Amino acid sequence: MDIYLETERLTLRRFTADDADLLIELDSDPAVMRYLSGGAPTPPELVRERQLPNILAQYEKWGGDLGLFAAHDKEDGAFVGWFLLRPEPEGPPDEVELGYRLRQAAWGRGLGTEGSRALLGKAFEELGLRVVWAETMSVNRGSRNIMEKLRMSLAETIPTPPDMLMVEGSELGGVRYEITKEQWEQQDPWREGSSASTT
Image (cartoon, rainbow, N blue to C red; front, top):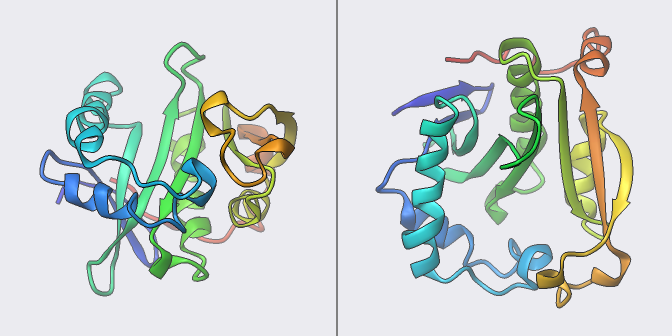
């Protein structure tokens, strides 16, 4: 396993060409896709032919340090979802997006916060990045809770993308949260999971 990062309960690794079925299964759950596609699954051929090849190409582009990472439960090895840490294609290289998508079985256990906090640590302490941001639908309280637990600040409201107008609550738009390296460092005494190991 090509381990990228470990936390108390999770192992994050780089995806491989054999992982399409994991992504297809994750995106087939209407509850997981509720605020992304209105519950519609991602077509398997889209995952196999475009999404997974793009994920693998991003590792090469950013030297394996940034991209999309598969998360597994340390206790039983189960795939629980993925975490994302990457810049926008044309954006500043020191400003990266934080993202996460977890299976229902992983909800309510604090794993989204745990994995995200470890990624923030890697971003600021190891990779020397300046800003980490995250976006979600205004009505997606579960995702917003994670951002707020990470002590990210609400930076702005954003319009709903045209391809998401069918999503529940789309009329309320979205939100963008941010945290800077300086803000992260000021949290140091409070931070949980700061001992997460990285490789």
